[in-house]
Figure 1 (cartoon, rainbow, N blue to C red):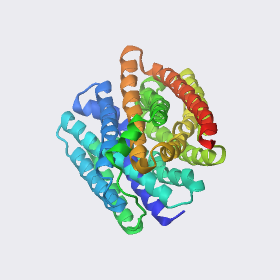
Figure 2 (figure 1 turned 90 degrees about the vertical axis):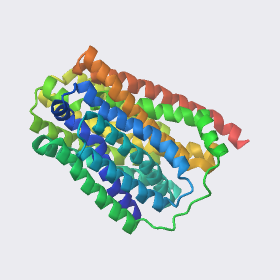
Figure 3 (figure 1 turned 45 degrees about the horizontal axis):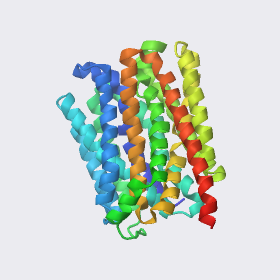
Figure 4 (figure 1 turned 90 degrees about the horizontal axis):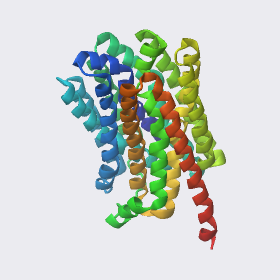
Length: 392
């Protein structure tokens, strides 16, 4: 793989840390700012909403910029947003900072995905995307548990200052290693962009992403309070369990990309979503048993994020068929769909916590993931039905 991909991975590590570290800090932030746990959960939802809005809109508006220039500009915005969060005087300011940072996040992963696919042969695209998203998963292995521990020990503001440092490292690595002469077609026209927004095939893919990915976040958003209030673990142990979860995520991300390269996106997603639903059901069943819960969480991470490379590669595949001049826009919309799912999952999880309790979130998440599995199978049937027409 080209060195430029590793620069994107480093940047993705910084972005992934700030996205997911909030999960481990929810109880700390809620207590410090004097808000309820579901209100603190909105810091996850509104960040994801910023990604959802920023990914398609800013990707389309900035389509004419050189990709490296856009990439570096997004990383500057990312650093500024995290600095704002570190010095936020209250809950409202922190919400605004999270939303601002989310705007940069969405376009970053959309552009990083298309840069990655332009640097490798077509048969290695899923693996290239998996390498970029490896930064996201390594963030779960190291950045998130370390950031959680820093926030619990020195205050959550210290965590955001640490993310600022990570963002600056990613900015410098990308400036040094990403080539300036990236191949880039003309910016998509409004008609091209409308074709993306009105394509039933792409809209179905976005729905699969939002539902299948979002179902996981119904439970994952409230992982820290589940482990402390239901499983009975201490705050120090929570950081270690998140570390274990992240290690599983890193393995699952790579396996998911290779599985999609080998058997295709739809079969890979079918296996992943089925496994994820089963693991979430198992988590709900053993949540009160510390050892069993930790064992299930070690497997959960692998299924939870293995769907990212095949979902993104599948979006690029369909976009090349229905809107070949707007692949960047299509990719950006799928990043938005990922985060729309996160926003929905955090919101639905908050409702479940208030009405049914923390222990209900894995069961609700499993039900939503099963719906994602059904939509995936439907999309596969539509693909098979379209092939004879394409051949004619």
